[in-house]
Structures are given as C-alpha cells and as structure tokens.
Image (cartoon, rainbow, N blue to C red; front, side):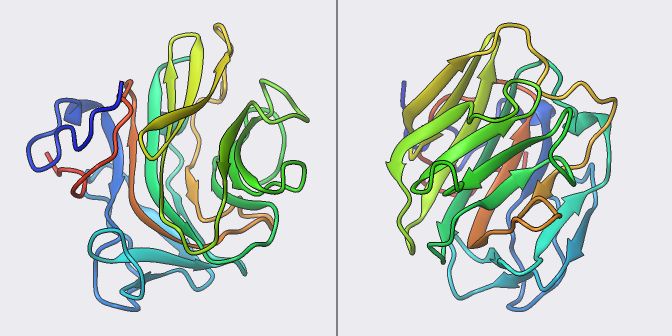
Length: 228
C-alpha cells in the first residue's frame, strides 16, 4: 500500500519509536550534523558537509566519495537484532562508480555487519542490501530500479516480522523472508551514513534520514519528516 505524503505536515504517530532523524539542514559548508530526535550524536569524517547545491527539501548532506561519512555513537538503538525497523532517506548519486556504500553498521565485513549499497560490483547497476548474518556473499535484496546519476531516490528498508522489504519512491521492489534471523546480534552498534568507513564511500547527496524501531508503510513524502 502506498501512502503518498502520509503524516507529512503533521505529527508522526511513530515518533516514540524514532531513534534518529537527520534533516541535513544548516548553512552551506557547515560541518555540523544535527539529530532532530536528540538521542544521539554524529561524528564527521573526511570532508562531509551540509550543502545547498542539491537538496530534496532545504539542504542536504554532501559526501564526495573520498573518505566522507558520518557515524553515530555506538548504542543498543542501532543493534537491529530480529526486531522490526525502518531505515528511510533520500539519495542522489553523483558518480557511476561501483560499490558505493550508502548506509552501514560496521567498519569491516564480518559478523553482525550490514550495508546498503549503490551499484555493488556484483550487481553493478542497482541498489542492494547485504547482511553478513543472512548471507555472507549474496545480496539479500536487489532493486528493480537501475541507478541513474543525478536522480533523487526515496529509499525505505523495512523489516516487518519475518520479512524484509525494499521500497524505492513508494513502490516495493524487493522482499525476502528472513524468518527469525538476527541481522545484527551485537549489544550495541554505530550507524554509518555515507560509506562503510573502510574504503567504500558514496559520492552523493543524502537528505532526510530517519531510523525507526517500528514498521513504516511505503510512502513517497511530500514534505520533510516531522520533528514530533
């Protein structure tokens, strides 16, 4: 079910389950990345900045693909386990290079690590989700959309019970039954935006990132995520 603009411009009925919300707003060139939920702090690496050059809404985060990323503090909020969650964000790629990690939770590929990737070398034209605990060498989810440089995409990665879903621009593009498997069974983790912190970085703009420990419906937002 696609709910276009659901809850945009009003309150978020799942606000209590939101663990991170970054609008990437601020002055051009700013190096401060504010979490509007206020639960976690984010550290900058490389030259990641707030940019007015491109944005889905106001400003966006710019990552140049050469060591740029931001990472949260390590916390149980980001240890996914086998529970429901939703990861959502806007993404605009600037490069056709392969294996650009967008979201990750590990510094290297190993137990409890996952990553969401733009044009992985093994699937060089699409979005893919990888989880070491679910499959060490094959993508768990692969989009039907072919990634086009200079295009904004709204991406939602959602776990609902035994099923994992990938939505692009409000439409379901992939699903996988993962039963009761733990995507991440660590006690605490950090969330990384812009790369995996060990060499696979995205050259892209990212806007409105939200992480919720609950199931979100497929949606194509018509406004920034609400702050309450």
